[in-house]
Length: 386
Ligand SMILES: *Cc1c(COP(=O)(O)O)cnc(C)c1O
Image (cartoon, rainbow, N blue to C red; front, side, top):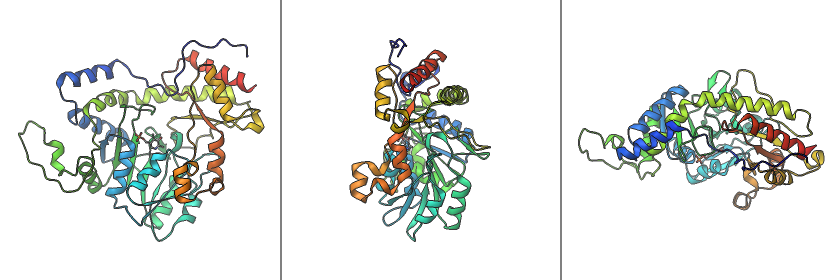
């Protein structure tokens, strides 16, 4: 190892926050309007236009968005929702919180996305919805999934936490399934600190999400604090406290303005990694499908001890010693104690997800990275593996 260690720790997925966001937050603070107000409305409209959907409803997380999507679609006790084990726990938790039962089916080993063939095999009379996850920003095989959903009259609710920019064969993610949930958590491609958005083309779902997200107060409650004077509200459902604040939307407005620019930068870094690692004994992201846009949310390496001489965890430790932060996305759902014990899952039930889970490691891909940072990461990865 003949490379000096950099002084400053390279935080994994550091957010790129710039002056316009900072000034917009200050403006909210000075105005005194911190909660849900005009900036949330503006952010929703901006996002809606970007996706091209009929409706976009801001919430305070993607998890909240997934939960509400399933509730307004009528899912609950006795229903089954098919999803992937290769995802963040919140995908599955939000199913459980509706009272429905998550049914996991294995993913493809190369794309790491839910395998449509296995969805078909898992359908029972209780199946009500499919919940695909566009993992790392790569769109799922939507043609096959839509075909299955249509044939079996299933709802299609998408976890697009990684997929704000994703396009599947010319169709924007967020404008395909019945409901789609996005995340603006600090590590995601567009951030508001905490935050999420649901898009849909169904006016009934859109109205209900608004109501359910704010205590179940009647539709107009969202407009209650306007200059039109005081209005009584009525509670029509025991709702949730899932609304987004103007303080959060203030950040999101300017993040959205740079979404294209940031994707360009992520793409550059992605290509640099692809070229630099092509000769290493590791797995790299699968090539893109034609006519699709990958949102470049996470760049992941597959570290197999038999091929590399070191394990994934040892690799992460070595990069940590070189002041580079990494992440694991994810330890598959079925390997966590709660789901394992509660649903009786075994590692071999989902062999591809288990295989990925043991090997995957994400390296930094923030648009904040300078070329010198990228070069340093590339050199460090090569030093550790060569
Ligand atoms: C981050 C993430 C979520 C949850 O997003 P929050 O906004 O933090 O609730 C859900 N699914 C996936 C795949 C994620 O990565």
